[in-house]
Image (cartoon, rainbow over all chains, first blue to last red; front, side):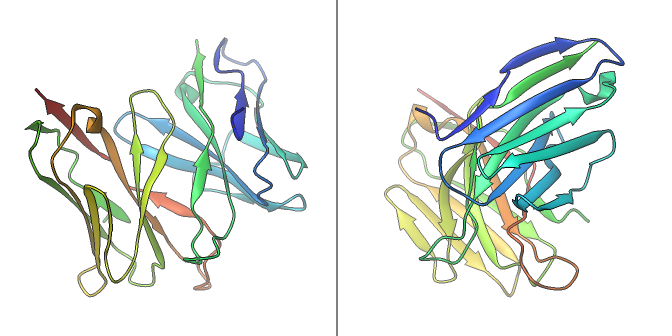
Length: 116
Length: 115
């Protein structure tokens, strides 16, 4: 079974609708992240959470909100979807590695969202 | 200036070729460095961390030059299966100068290995 799962994998929605993307992980990591990826723009950080009570905005948080329901679950919501939120969304987790002291991140399979 | 900058390519090379990718980063306080690989429409996957002394994993060699703020990835004996986008990733410190495990991704370099 995958360590980081995302649901749904694909979603088409209309402008103005509220939509939630869900992420679950079995890696036992404290840190979770939401990114979006657009062609030519790379991965951009939307929100991140270092534990259940610690949630922070990333570089492009406008129009998004998140909820960290448990250590293993981190949801991303679009309160009123707009077409320029059409993108590939990734959830990721990380924990400090023992050897390098660095924060390698592990990604879910992604959610392809289309807003019409 | 972008925080992490890569040549987007694409690089088209024959099987067996050696290919090198470069990446520069703007913040001299950056602490951790990685190369990720991303196949089309799939999630990024960690290829290797980059250590100050340089490191090698099979056909892949990563180098870090802190003075020049430059990271490289060398792939020897390219295989068809190496075709992917390679992402240079840097752990930048926050405004206070401490690291909080946030990664900044370059736009990626596209590699196509052909027969």
